[in-house]
Structures are given as structure tokens and as C-alpha cells.
Image (cartoon, rainbow, N blue to C red):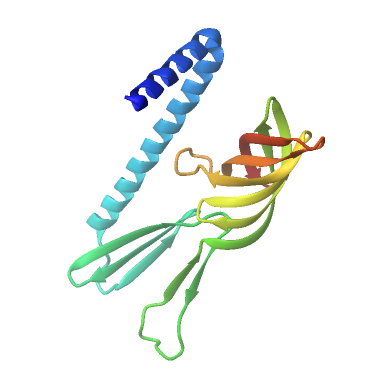
Length: 198
């Protein structure tokens, strides 16, 4: 019962916000619909790539193929009569290493995808914290689509968490972020925004 009351209260708050500020509500709704459509498009695209790979199979006499796109590493290999397909994400900060061991030249090369670690990437973007502010930041840790940044903007400086949105939107180097820090007067501030790597 308590959950139903909270849900109805949230619906009432959303409706009153939409009535008081219809333009803002329309913008939020359009952004939500854009993200949802992009996410569904990328999900269907991934399914179609996987289906195509399974239908095409491997050329005769080939044990394994590795295809590296800008943000994907696709591996296909034979497992008996079956073709196995793996699609892994490669962040812009990451890299792919192919290792061939001296003591086993007949074995398949080992594919090492570096999708987490430390990095040194400057970036910039905009953040909303009461008003829209320009920001500059330094990303120093990444793990798949996530990262940790130190950011400075005209009102405050702080630490934040980022996430690449290339799985939901067609922009390869765009990230959303949340930052918490201290304002120049010593008050705690929170901000949400977008950024890109330089």
C-alpha cells in the first residue's frame, strides 16, 4: 500500500511539473524517447550482426576470425560443427593486443582486450547544477563504458562518474556524467551533464 501511495505521489508531482512547465516536460519526454529509440535500434543492430555471423559461418579451413570495428571486437570460432560468436565492447580508451606464443605456433593467437585500467584523457562538456555551466575534466580511470573523472567548472570542482552512451545513441565519444564536489564557497554541489574526450 505504501508503495502505491509513493507511486501515485510521484505521478502527481510529474503531472504538476508538466502543467507548470510544459516546454521543459516536452524536452525531457523527447530526450527520453530519443534515448529509448536509439537503445532499441542498437539492440536490433547487435542481433542482426549476430544472426548474420551465424548464417555466414566461417570460410572452409578457417578455425577463427577476429574483426575489430571502432568500438567492437567480434570473434567467431568453430566448436565442433557449431560456430560460436562473441561480441565484446572496446572503449575509446582501450586497445586490443594479439599475442602468438613462441612455444605453440599452431595454437590460435590470444586476443587480449584492454577494457579497464588507468588513462590520461582531457575532456570537456556542459553540466547542469542550478544552471548550465561549461566544464573541463580529466578522466583517469575507465572500466568498459564507465569512468572516473576530476572536473572543474565556474561554480565548483569535484569528482564524478561517467558512462559512454554509444549503446543508446549513435555518438561514439559522448558520455553522461554525475559530479559531486565543493563550491568555491565551501558548499556541497551536485551536477549532471554530458562530456566528450578531446
